[in-house]
Length: 266
Image (tube, rainbow, N blue to C red; front, side, top):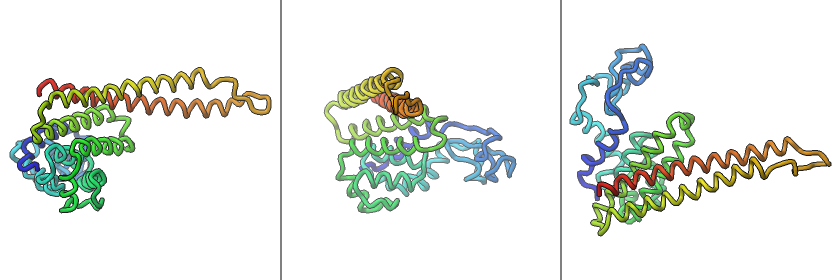
């Protein structure tokens, strides 16, 4: 179990939530929740003026925000009783995308009833799960959710790297808690798997693109005439498939990089 692990998990998340910002164009930085409404107090450690209008945001310290994260995220997600590593990835997901979504995803991964409430059933099944596999599956589902957002094209690079880093750190926490005989070797093994997946996906993307540019040609004939509309349609579908494979290759590479980085300090 992950008793007292908030102190290890929170700094990882806050590294991505960022420092102080008071951009007046961001409605979250205003105490009224809209640009120009209320007072411009900003956001720090992920704590926004719109949600916490009575706090002195600029002067917040880690000691100030820890109880907030514990009350609003850590406890509702049952993270105190989750296995080490699985607590981190669930907690970080909850802060980034909401506790209900993170809880339901956790439940789906461990085979519990997906009601968004982390209770005895969820904790029991999480404890009995293959923790490393649960960590990786939850992060894969999280990334899948993020890819469906309208803002994915804007933030995909940062989101992909964040999820990959949190996954690798979660696995490293699990390895440490389980007293694994060779944590560095285990991390390098995961890095190798991710790199192999990236190579395979890059090759598939290249082959698909070659099919689109060279394999789909004027041989598509209908009624004695080249069906250019059909060719264009096939070309578009194949290029979309190639693009998806290329994205997956970049994500696999991000995972490989994250595991490799942690292996160096293990």
